[in-house]
Image 1 (cartoon, helix red, strand yellow):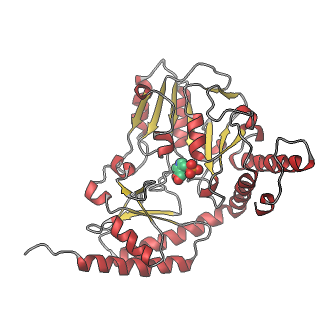
Image 2: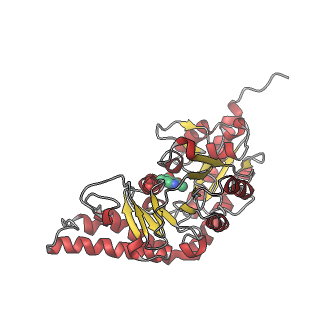
Image 3: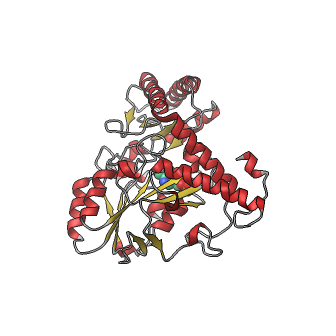
Length: 368
Ligand code: PLP
């Protein structure tokens, strides 16, 4: 990525520098295609997953040569804002599907919605794994149901990439969306990937010079795309051993939390979830206070849902799981990644124990 930053070529130019930039992009497209198991020509680079989701979630999406517009968008209640706010369907055409208390899409509710919309063309947006709880979603099962009803599925695989199954063969989805910065790549690069070649989007968003075969105009961010590909190669190389390493670190972290706060409540921990995510609340300990106390110790964690203003916002995911709001307000999310080590987990254990003790000792005791 750093080498590409020093090269000036525009990938649309025919001179040598341009051809070199083009070669970088096409090599990156091949890396992405290998990861998700599709053809390189089915991969489009965007500025991130949010843009890719905005682009895909339109009634005008054409798949398998089918030009009939989608009538209905079903979304799971735990989707990222890039889906919930980013789709381009009219408000009357959206239906939110509930999560179970474990944080998994309720497949019975999906069946009921598909039956209600029989005769209509349905698009389902379902993430591969949730960004707050790490809970893995039943994408293959949902895809089978949606396809049987003549519909299609868009899967936000941003969190699952490198940490769980994330390819067309395993997930059975029609579209996969990825983001570079969740797998160690740069911020500001994403991909929209199709399972097969017969696709089109008439109402594209970024229009202009026809780059990315007309789906996403604008001079390509070659360095970011090269960084994205490097991260994809890293993920592919690390494979299952990295997943096992992360799970060991996360499980240790959760055991440490239990020692300093035996009354801790974990969310999403009883079902299949990503190896790098822990989401929990300590009753009576607010997320904001805990976050700040940990930050002072050099530990960076998130609340259930950090909104762009930096304020702690109520988590729509925990709400959809039926977690009482008093408890949900204390939820913090600890994410581990490729650079996390045993030392980091040690540092967290010490900082967390200190923070909980300090916060609890300052709490006003109820009158006897
Ligand atoms: N989807 C999920 C599940 C995410 O966690 C994120 C980012 O946090 C996004 C989409 C948005 O990705 P980007 O930041 O590339 O727009």
